[in-house]
Length: 498
Ligand SMILES: NC(=O)C1=CN([C@@H]2O[C@H](COP(=O)(O)OP(=O)(O)OC[C@H]3O[C@@H](n4cnc5c(N)ncnc54)[C@H](O)[C@@H]3O)[C@@H](O)[C@H]2O)[C@@H](O)CC1
Ligand SMILES: [K+]
Image 1: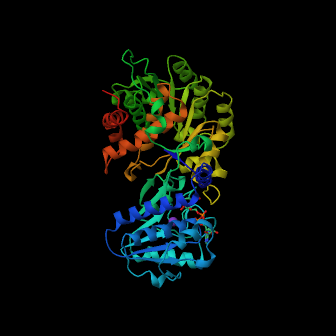
Image 2: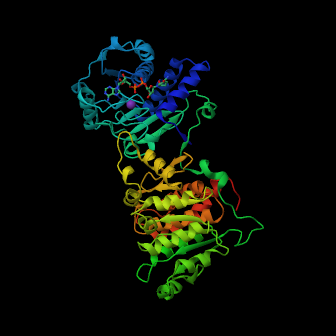
Image 3: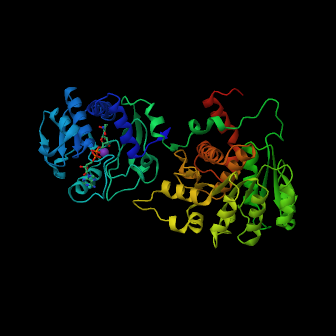
C-alpha cells in the first residue's frame, strides 16, 4: 500500500474536493469512522474527546456529536476558545450541542475512552505548554486512547515525537497510512492502526504519484521470481558468496544457505585456501571453490555467475575492497554488506564512483546504523527535518545503489526516488547472523534477475516473515530452515498453485 506524506494527503483531499466532494463531507466521514472505532474500543462508559484548534479537532467534534446521537455519554475538552475556530472545524463544533470544557487536565476524570483529536497532519512545531501538559496527563491517566489520524505529537512524515506525544491504543487514519505510522518511534505510539475509506477515489493517486510504500507483496509481486516448469538450476541463477578467513567463515555460510533457500539455483562459497577444509566440511548443497585473490575471484565470477554477496565475515581492508571492485568490474549484481561497506569507510566516494560508472549496475548496500554512518557520516543523525526515510533516500541518490538501512522499520530506497518501509519484522529478528541471512535472501532474488530495488524489498519482507515463522527464541540458522513455510504462505497469498 502506498504511503502518503502529509502534503500528499492534503493534495488527495484537495483533488477530492475539486472533484465535487465538499471538505466537510470528508470530515463527517472521518468523524463517523472515529465514532465506529470508539464504539468497538469501549462498548459502554463515558467517552472524552480532547480537541485541538484545527481540522483534527473538527474530526473530534463530529465524532462527539455522532456518539452523543447514539446515546453515548460524551464530553469535550477544547484546547482553545470555541469562538476562535475557523472553517470546517468551526462548522463541526456547531454540530456539537453539549458543553465545551477548557484545557484543564484535572477535567480528564476516568472515562472509558479518550479520543485524541488535538493535532493531526497540521502539527508543525514542538508541543509545549498547555497541550504538552494535557498529553502527559492523558498518557498518565491509564485510559485507552483512540487517536484521530495520528497520535498527537507524532510527525506524520518522520514518525518523530515532537516534544511529547499521545501513546494511543488505536489510531484511525484515512485513505492511506503516512510514513510516520510505520517509522519508529511513531509506530510504537500508534497502537493498532486502522486505515479507513472516507470516499477519496484511488484515482487521485495517479495524479499525486506517491513514491513511498509499505513493504509487502502488493509492492513487488509482479517482480517476484517464480521457478518455471521448463526451468532448471541454471535458469534460477548462480550466486557466489565470499568467505572470510579460517576464524570467520560462518557468516558467509549463513548467507550462502539463505541464497539457496531463497531460490538461487546454485550457490558457491569462494573460500580462502586456509579455510577450505572448514567450509567444505560444513557445506553440502552449497559448493566451495578455493579463492585467495581478487584476480582468482574475477576468474570465478567471469563464468556463469549472476550475483555476488560480499561482506559477511569478509574482513575489513584492501583485500575485501579488491573483491568488491572485481564484482563491479565484472558487472555482476551485488549485495554489499558488513565488511564490504566498512572497507570503504575511508573514502566512500571511491565506492560510489565505481557504482555510478555503470548506470545499469544492480547493487544493494545493506548497512546497519553503524555501517551507514561510516559511509554517509553527514546523514547519520535523525532530526526534525531529516527522517530515516530522508536519510536513506539521500544515501541512495548519492551512492547510485539501492540502500537498505536495517532496523525494526527497515527502509529500502532506490536512486530513482522510490522507497519502502517494512512493518513485519518481529523484535527477536535482531540476533547474531540475522543480517547475513538477509544478505543471502537479497542475493537469491538478484541471482534470478530481479532488479535491485525489488530484490531488496523481497529480501526484507521474507526475512521478517521468517522471523515471525520461527518465533521468539530463534537463532539465525532457524531463519533459513523456515523458508519453505514462508514461501508456502506467500504462494497462498498470491494465489499461486504449488
Ligand atoms: N479536508 C481536509 O484537509 C481534511 C482534514 N482532516 C483532518 O484534518 C487534519 C489536519 O488539519 P489541520 O491542517 O487543520 O491541522 P491540525 O488539526 O492537525 O492542527 C493544526 C493546528 O494546530 C496548530 N499547531 C500545530 N502544531 C502545534 C503545536 N506544536 N502546538 C500548538 N499548536 C500547534 C496549528 O497552528 C493549527 O492551528 C488531519 O489530520 C485530519 O484529521 C479530515 O477532517 C479529513 C478532511
Ligand atoms: K490526533
